[in-house]
Length: 262
Image: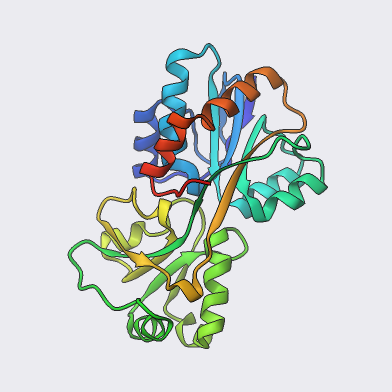
């Protein structure tokens, strides 16, 4: 079987996934061999990579996984891509089901996560405890980064936060929009002062420190779901993997990676 991987990887992510035994490749290249093709939102990358490694130790099924922001996944589905298993935000599920990209009534929650702010390890910790404090911290910051709102859940939400705080125009010139992957990696390197992304995409980044979640009044908790692809080539194998991902033991991996139980 053949599947195209569209997720761009940097060297850090590539080494991490190779170490975990997950089959991935650079944009535009091809991966051969996976029995089950899984498309997953980037928020689930860390726990899912661990679980795929565990799953393949005991199963004859193999996994080809592709990580990308939800908006990118939805566009690929609209362009005709058909994975066996899909992990997306619950917000996107209605669109997925409306377009018959997943099998009806197969979607189930796997975890929920909020949006956080990252700083470089060792950097002074500014105040983000209230909306007013966050507003002032963002105005004071020399630079910040968050996911492109057209591509990712956290970016879309944070763009609305900036609008609510009334500072979208004031921070635009010092903002770098992320494309795919862990957008706080430049924060870990010291290239950008503040990074905003879902907490599960901050915690794995070495050199970055989770400053904290957005204040409650500005927070967005996203529920992620796993669903069976509408045109899966092997529904039995795909359902077996889905059952494994939703097992009690697997849920503990999600929680240890920054998710809250669904």
